[in-house]
Length: 97
Image (cartoon, rainbow, N blue to C red; front, side, top):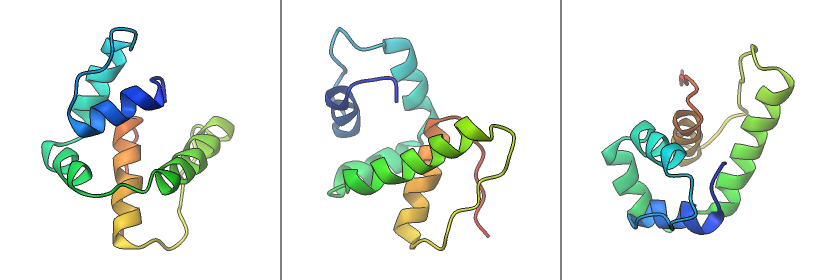
C-alpha cells in the first residue's frame, strides 16, 4: 500500500489522514471501497495479520504475473470478503463462485 500503517488505521476508523499522506491515492482508495464495506470494517476487530497476509499473496502474485488470474485456496466467507476488499483497493476485478 502507498500510505503508512498509521494512515491506513486512520482511514479504517474514519479519521482524516495526516498531512504527510498522499491524499490523492488515499481518496482514490476510499472511493474504491463501498460505504457498506467501510462500515463493516469499522465495526469489526479487523485481523490485520490476515489482511497483510492476503494482500501480500495478492500483490506478490500480480507482480510476478500481472496478466494472469489469481485463484485463491478455499477461504471462509469473512476471508473472501477481505480478499474482495483488497482487490477493490488495488483496483482489481474479483469474482467468487
